Image (tube, rainbow, N blue to C red; front, side):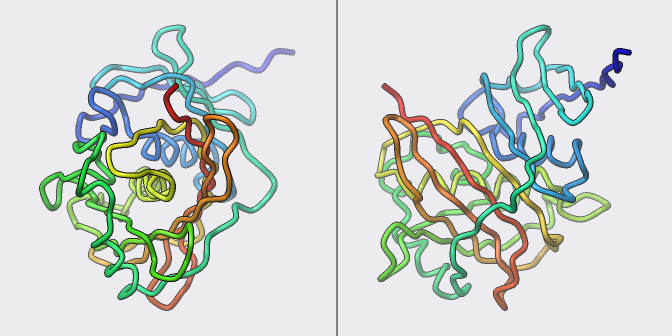
Length: 238
């Protein structure tokens, strides 16, 4: 007996771009995680090709996976994982906010229009600018002041939290002007993000292999309560 796939349509608004003309990978990861299991457990999202903006895409839910297609072209796949997603250590909000002064993207940014870490107008993008944490090698952090403009009637959606977890793992590796593309993001949500709230967004490097860069990130409440975590694989250009 063959199980039929449940198909719906997803269109990514231009607002949620990462690199120009394609969707932010963390936004996609949060969206597919929520689609797969409502964010109740960890999900691994693999980005197979850039996802276009403003285009009707096919979202296919089959058994324990969710996949996104542009016609017959596979773009993104999400599957559940049994293990909890590891998180970097907590950084206090005041220290995380101070670290923003060292954000490498201020000197040169490959994707300045990015929804998560770009220089968008306040309220339009998240404006998460991670910089090195003093005395902690490989650790970066930023203070996240959550704009009300990213919330819907149910609060801050998983797609936005996924975006917050995404770019910070790249900036744990990148120097001014360098670039890489997200290849995979494992995401786990623990608590809701509150519109207007303040949080620490933290990431650290966990290794590299050839062109691959590995990192882990987390969103923390001001008292150190873990809100969400992600483990990322980035691909540096040849």
